[in-house]
Amino acid sequence: MSTATVQGADTADDGGSSPAMHERVLEAVGIAIASSSLPPGSRLTLEGLQHEYGISRTVARDTMKVLESMNLVYSRRRVGIVVQERELWNVFDPKLVRWRLASDRREIQYSSLTELRIAVEPIAAAGAARRASAAERARLVALAAELRRLGEAGDLGAFLAVDIEFHRLLLHSCGNEMFASLEGMVAEVLTSRTQQGLMPFKPRNEALQAHEDVAAAVARGDAVMAETAVHHILNEVRNAMGLH
Image (tube, rainbow, N blue to C red; front, top):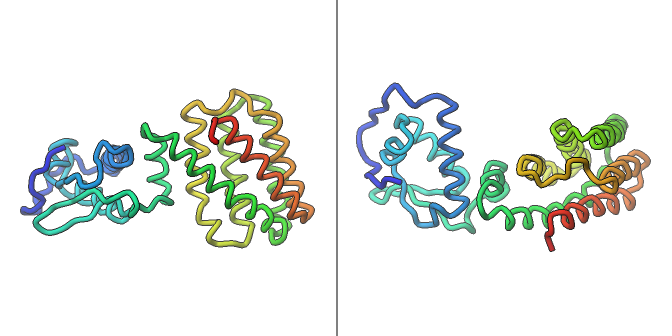
């Protein structure tokens, strides 16, 4: 990638400035950083981005602003835009989670995310059993039944959408706003497993039953059983993916 200087007049052209172009460039540069194709210390410039991707200066600047907000890069006068050290990255940002899962370092990211889910989601389920509203309890039961139907039918696309809603609702209904903030991250890992062909054509019966057990336990206010059932879901995920 070009390392032309970042200084200069703001001379954005009319082309290469659509929202779709911005997202495409952001995705490409983000994955390059996440995969270490652009390792920490690498220098980027607005002119280099313009030349490589055929974009306007405005799009190049906006792309760098997003990456800087995620602590993936920093900018310094007379130095340019520099890729940050990994320990400074905002690793909970759903976009970074997606980029890391799309890189050749995905196995490390799956392992980290699964360990995080094991630490958080069982406690969230116990919280939901104690604090969820009647409507939230009923919705979890309905979603678990829908997961059973779609899983047995092998409709993985529709299954994914319902599975994301199930886990989002579990995090939101637990009464812990910090757990709820992880919903985007969980949605990204569920989506990635499906898109990368890491889900069986038909989800295992044990996984479907565990979701039903979680919903039933939350519905009747059984915090211990809700926590145990989520452990079963995540242990099945860890074993299916060979994560130890």
